[in-house]
Image (tube, rainbow, N blue to C red; front, top):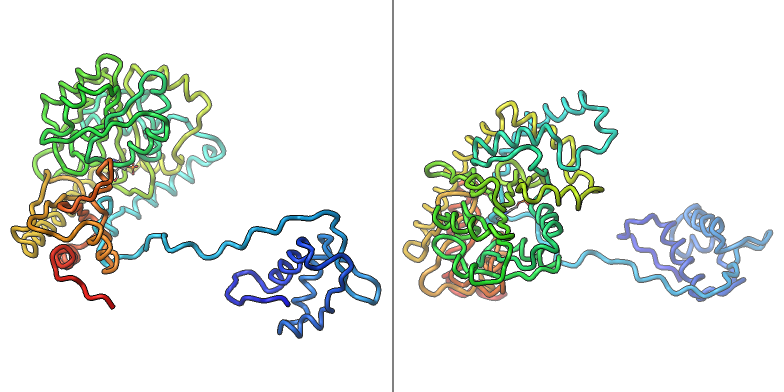
Length: 467
Ligand SMILES: Cc1ncc(COP(=O)(O)O)c(C=O)c1O
């Protein structure tokens, strides 16, 4: 007896075909067994005769069954046993994160209505019209020269980075850059120092490439240099202008000491991920600009200032790695799509990026203020905001005896709050009961206030009653 499932997205005739086929292959229907007539099978399954005929025609065409004049359909001899097909995949397990939250505190969330779509569309269409022949070819593996030229000028103006366009590689995100760096340094370097607490991605990428990864503490001036110097690490990954997640700025004395550390065949990876978003004073100049010929690999991204969905980022290689880059990546192809690169170049050349940035700084400054005001209102002295006025997130130190992180995260999820646990920043993943990691980019000031009020209940409120 075949069983048809009306929730199965496949047409009914395909279900009949698949079930008969499976029975033939596994021998449940032996060779020369007679199949019910299409009319009988249709009546039995409650489908039209055409549906069964379609399934039989399919089976016939593929040789699973044959006809005998006037006597109907029979199973063909397959010749050898075939193992049963693996069971049909059922619906995705419920590990898939929910996509809609009422309150989104993810630290990488941007304002959802601020992408400059109409200007972007205009340059995108212009590129499709004017550069059509380029769409029939691979672009420059290092990234479109027009974008690299725009970027060089922008980085010099806004971040004090000094480089030529030959030093810039356009990438599709930090992960892509780090993958290349790990390949570039293989054979020269063995061990990566990462900030602890710090951004988890570099730990993962370098460990996957077989490097030793050494979590190194972060103090008030950023990475603990004494600990770094005492280690055997030969690469240091740092976020010196806005330490992720604590927000420390590395002071100039430490920067110079770190550059000195990198002189003898060691390398610094400077991740300058959100330095343009500074709400107090001017952006902190890059470390790279202090020693452009030093062993500093500078990485930056458009994920914070424009959109993380575009997957556009870049790295600036030091002169000491250029020859190796060309040697190792001789057959590599571009890592980012040309239309996006060209559109971005036009967007930058026409002054839109800096205009957009000025606007977004004002938007995010207001949101940050709304968040800190809400924390003061709802948490009072139980919350201390840590870190400089920059970026898209804050870290909150919780006083007293807050509920533990695991339970808070679970309660938040159940209440429609997207809350990334601070412990993702700990190299050993230990719970961070005293810290909240709160992004403020994705919500309105009103949502921030309501969300923070709920967070207080989740952190300190009475035990929720179980249903
Ligand atoms: C410290 C840090 N670096 C880099 C990135 C991401 O950059 P991209 O989107 O270019 O991979 C993030 C994203 O949140 C980040 O927090």
